[in-house]
Image (cartoon, rainbow, N blue to C red; front, side):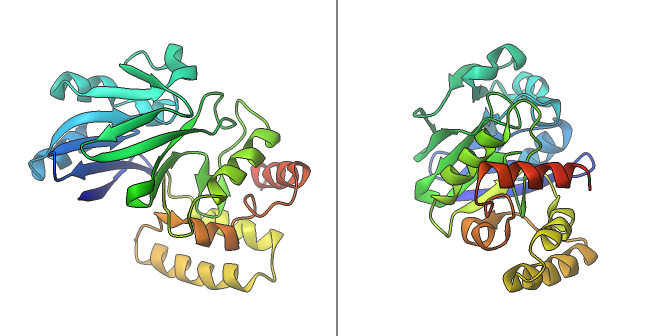
Length: 240
């Protein structure tokens, strides 16, 4: 019913193109730029009907205006960041739902990287689009929020089912894993995962999506036992 296509753009961003075959609807998550997204949709003969934004940063919204002009699509994004994303048509926050054809997503508030950051959880598809909140073995920098908020975000996301595929917006996995090994050098699951990550990157392959089970086992920010521990790890990562 749902097909997700990875579109690499800029230096390390991923834009996600999502197609629901029953309705023929196609949605874009966090388009940094328009050209490659429109080209990929055209190649597949898909018509873009929606954009879902997770937060206001330009490398997540930069393609909004041009895609909307080309397709007439509807743009959904965080209510708390409406002033910073002028292209939004629908404002959402935790408790709201959005739909792509027959697929329903629930909105989760995950502030910290930005003040109004949201994620979209598609329980029927076992998928979540998390923007820059949760990465493979990492989390977003605390630009507009604090460690307490990010710690709460980790609790929300780790409560999702193990098999939930996590679609984040950047290819940061190898660097994140290298840092994770400095935090938990004796974590066997982490060491095994990093062997696979390094091999994939050496072949030029992507390492995301990840999943909740893998993050519970190897992500030093999700595994932090307190707000203070997460804060210390985030500061160390920022300075690495």
